[in-house]
Structures are given as C-alpha cells and as structure tokens.
Amino acid sequence: MFARRIVAKHVTYTTAMAMLGATAVLSGLQVLFTYLGELGSLKEGYGAKEALYYVLWGAPNYLYEILPISALIGAVLGLGTLASNSELIVMRAAGVSLWRIVGWVMRSALLLVILSFALSEWVIPYTNEQAKMVKNSQKAAQLGEVRGYWTREGQRFIYINYANSQGQLSNVQMLDFDENYRLRGTLHASTGRFIQDGAWELKNTEQMDILANGNATLVNNAEQSLALALQPKYVHMVTIDPEDLAPSQLVSFMSYMHEYSQVPKTYQLAFWQKLGSPFALIALVVIACSFIFGPLRQQSMGFRLVIALFAGLGFFYLQDFLGYASLVYAPSPAWFVFIPILIMFGIGGYLLHRAR
Image (cartoon, rainbow, N blue to C red):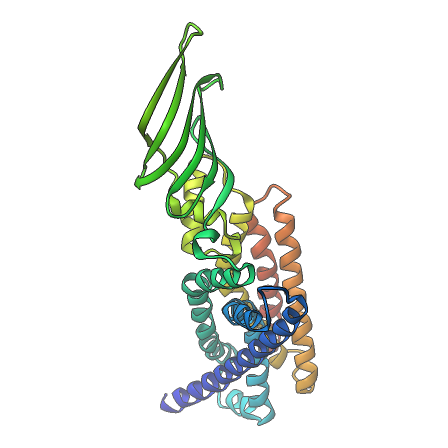
C-alpha cells in the first residue's frame, strides 16, 4: 500500500509538472504572438506601451482558452516520459491497473480544472474589461454605458435611450399593453435613477392612461417612483460580450431574462461553454492516455504530440462549429457543446478499454 502511494505521487507529480510546463510555454507564446500582432494596429493614443498593457491584461483569457490543450499535451509528455523510462511497464507488471494510472493522471488535471474555474469566475471578467479600456482608451464608467436599449417586463415594453452601470437613465419610454396586446398607457421620463432592488425614481414624467371608453388622461409629475426588475448590474452586462461574463453573472442575467421569456441564445451558449470547459479538459486527458496505452504506444514522442495537437484542434473546431450552429437551430446549446465532449470521452474510453 505504501509503495503504491509513492508510485501514485510520482505519476501525479510527473504529469502535473508536464501540464503546468505546457501551460507556461503555450501561454508565453500566445502573449508574444498576440503582442506582435497588436504592433501592426498602433495608432494615435494606442502605442507600443498600450499594446503591451492590453496583451498583459488579456493574458488570463489566453491562459483560460489554452488550458484544455495544455492538459492534452502535458498528459502526453508526462506519460510519454514514464513510458520511455519503462516505468509504466513496471507498474503494469506489478499489478497496477490501467484505469488506476489514468485516475492518477486525472488528479493532475484537476489542478487545471480548478485554475480554469477560478479564472472564468473571478479573474477574466475584470481583466478583459481592463483590456478593453486600454484598447479603446475608455474609462470604466464608459464601458458600462448602453444606448438604445430595449427590454420587456411582462406586458410592459421599455426603451431607454441611455443607461449606465451607476444606475442613471435618460429619455425613458414605456408602453403598457393588456393580455391582448392593446395599448393601456404610455410613460415618458427625461431622467431616472436606481434606488434599490426593484425600485427606480423617474423625473419629469409624462404618463398617459387609456381608459376603457377610449378616452385618455395625461398626468405630469416632477418625480415618480416606478417598480422595475431591471438593475444596474444587468445594464452593465448588456455592454459585455457573453463569453467575458463570469458563470455566476450569466446565471443571474439569464434568470432575469428568463422571467420575461427573452434569453438570447448567445448567453445560453456562453454559459454552457463555460460549464463544459472542465469536462472538455478531462476528455482531452482521457484521449491523451489512450495515445500512450492504445494504438500509438509504439510510436515516438514527436508523433504522439503531432496527433495530440490534431486531435485537440479538431475537437475545438468541431465545438466552435456546433456552437455557432446552436444559435440557428432549435435544440438547446447544451447539446451542441457536450456532443463533441461525449465523442472524445467515447473514443478515449474505447481505446483504453481495448488496451486494458
């Protein structure tokens, strides 16, 4: 039992170091080539220094995107090293099962899974916003601004000419309809501000109510309270690309939108992609293990790496293609995100089962 623990730590350590090393190398290359690409788009107010800041702020996002490929390459390198030293053969001869070795490799992959979640939840939403500020020479307040925003709450349709993440509104127009979509009234306000959850204060309002007999009443108020589920944080989220939002932000925003049956598929796709990212990473590690124990076990390390790269790129191209397809076709984006992951799990599991 003690000897098995030592072997388990050795396998886990070797593959973990290989994965972290691959992550560091690929991240460094990504930052370098992105910076070189940015040097070709310099302009007044956006020089080489700003380009460097932009790339460095974007580095966590690059890291997040390459983690699955890093896990794949790292697993191939780590297990390949053990195989080259005949250590895997000794383990198998000593009675260590193939699936136990795969389980030890999965422990290493869990480090990258935890890192992936931490980046997507707490780091990337902030750093991507900072990168956008540098790129567009904007202030934080300007990034939270939205113009010409339409939303719906029940039978009320709301148009906001200007809103920002500080809870300030300008030129607000509302249309209230009954269940048969007959107009019941309108409301116009020159400005508004957020008070607390569900409560807004409008100024210089003009409210028209249509009576049952067809007549209408018009009331002007200097100030008027209004109950709206809209919150400043949702206004801010509208200005951010869905893939730049944290999973918790996506859940919150989709819950708000779902209440009024208007969840855009782009937000659903971004959520399922973030949820599926750890499973994609693990699926690629399973594929890497199948390369070492399966039909490629007699091939050289270089050949395995080339095949691993092709497998990883093919997986991501398929996932991207199906992701865009999910925006057009009826099924939930979850199906399109998880189908490639299930395919990789199936192929890797089948090859490992044959090599058992």
